[in-house]
Length: 422
Ligand code: LLP
Image (tube, rainbow, N blue to C red; front, side):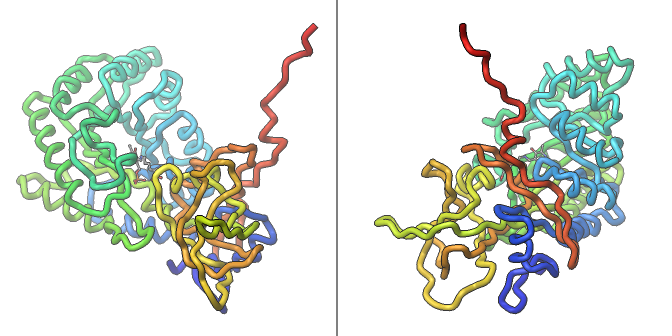
């Protein structure tokens, strides 16, 4: 990617040499590119031109305030899944009128906060949730705008842990049960039906699963219309994949064009209803790297290990999904490149970041783990009492620390011990 490129044999983020950042801020370090965020947004902006559509950034992918503020400035809406995420979007001054609230387990306090903020829509996932939401809204003297998240039972052809639209998943309401749920929604005093929602999975690289889902959603919309239930927007969720190794990502403009084509084919004006998308990964995934330093090299019978200062607590995706992330030497060396497993210091065999990578390494070298802008820092933990990494945003030749490195003291701050026993 042009945002992270070699100049005179040194990997840079924008115009900043990564060794300089490592020296100033230490490692492990998440490095993001403001230009990359803006370029990814441009891809969606182009797709939206001339269409009745809204992009709500699936902020679970990376919820750093600096990232949120950047997208808010660009005019994005947000897809939130918790009261905590709501607090973040409000903290950056985003427009709550462009916020959709997703998630299978919304609590009453979260509903209250979202109603008070005035979100665009609640994506509701069960009849029990409809009832609770109506009660909360009535108590506040408000009406909650709702979509039902339906489960279209299509295979997104991605990793099973991140496919969410199959009928065996916990998500959504089976599409066959949706008409009944909509009738319930209509009958409840605190609710106003505004849309239909689905989200079929993540890291999707084909258009066809979206269109399969859309067909089922459009059938439902017709059915509901016959029932006198008017649907104003279609939320097709997120899920557009990115390039980790050799994937060919879907262009947002191609997806929206195909979606409009499909709606037009039914003789419906595609701009009559608003299309909402909730992309996360595709807006941030390749806008970040994880910078880490080799602590030790170790040859064992099983092979060679490069033990680095980042670990599964910093980047969980390899451990959890066997995800593949590219690993680049920050200052490539000439010579022999034996095969290494890149592993962290945590006491688990599952603690690896990459396996079988040919690299020419020495102790102390810096490595950049690629595609670490999405589902990376947000999934970090403090396992092994490892303070979470710092995050820095590069903008041209400037850089801004957007999250300080956690301290061990902060990590213990909320804990206490019992009084001595007498
Ligand atoms: N909307 C809903 C309702 C979602 O559940 C998700 C992601 C998104 C939007 C955004 O999807 P995206 O555009 O980022 O694919 N931790 C996993 C990914 C989990 C995705 C969860 N839902 C990973 O690291 O691959």
